[in-house]
Length: 154
Image 1: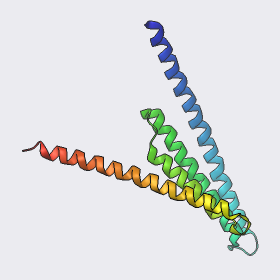
Image 2: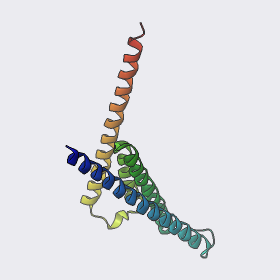
Image 3: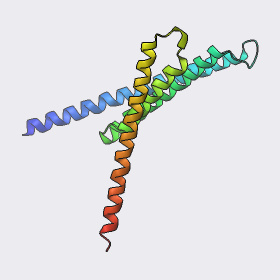
């Protein structure tokens, strides 16, 4: 029995160490991505004609903005898992939706086969439906808790 306890303690420590390492690596990645975004933005804005960006440059910049946002959301997921040992499904949905939005924004529709566009559309519909169902279940759970709290008063 004590052997199982030690093994469980070791695995818990190991899991926390790995998650802490992932958090550190993700934080470094987000930092350098944000710095890359700043450098790109300054270079694009200072290049002639000054303070003007063409459509491709804007799309690249928006894509990098969303990439930094995805990194921050993933970092939040790791932090929540380290603190609560729970993966927040809502955050995972948000990361996936931001990632697919990034793909749609930087996509050059002229060069993509129609099957790929249909696939992306189905991913968007599926993620939206899943997020809606998740939120609906959450609202229903809150409503039931609220009704249960009111019913005991009287």
